[in-house]
Length: 252
Ligand code: BEZ
Image 1 (cartoon, rainbow, N blue to C red):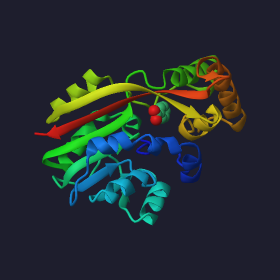
Image 2 (image 1 turned 180 degrees about the horizontal axis):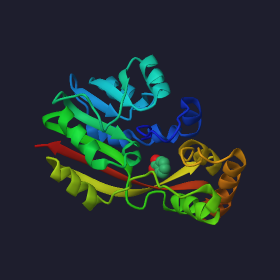
Image 3 (image 1 turned 90 degrees about the vertical axis):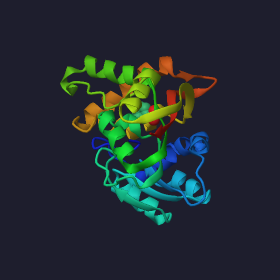
Image 4 (image 1 turned 180 degrees about the vertical axis):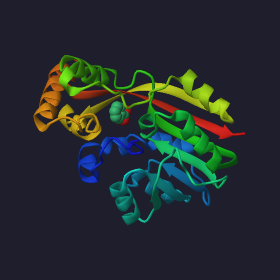
């Protein structure tokens, strides 16, 4: 997830410094959640808690879950009740009015297990509101990484850790697990970044963890060269080619 991922390593300070956009761009999905006074809401992949704080500000009680102990520490420091845990193994049974998740579920390859756990955690009539990478998300970023692995066989096999479903695929999955889908859409979200090297450091560090430091340097340098042709321009600088799937479904 942002953090429900066992392969990536998350440093909350580096993450916050270069990815403030993750929560800044998330207000529309909080609005889609429409938290109400007194509701109990599970935030899956709560990270360091910025959105959980916003949801509590609107009167709901949030419980956060994230795979990263460092992120949970920061989340707790903001006053949010939160736990280290995985969306594929949630301990809750029909407890929540809503499950919310931003920028997380593209890290969970076992999407069915995630949806089953989310459904189990919700009360009947409860809503699931999410935003994460949809079909075609980060196409240039992923293609560049794959190309660099292909060009350097000593790096091993490129193992894509991300799940970017289409609207049809995710709707079908939700319906199969007992949801009625009220809304789902994928929209392009070109996202500025100070330098793609920071993005690679933060989001692709799981991919380079078995490389030597020299191989990691080559990996990043070659990705950057390729990406300069596709997601960089003099006028706009670096622009990540994000596409967001946003949806709202009700447990029936
Ligand atoms: C994203 O937030 O869309 C994303 C994160 C990691 C890899 C690719 C995309």
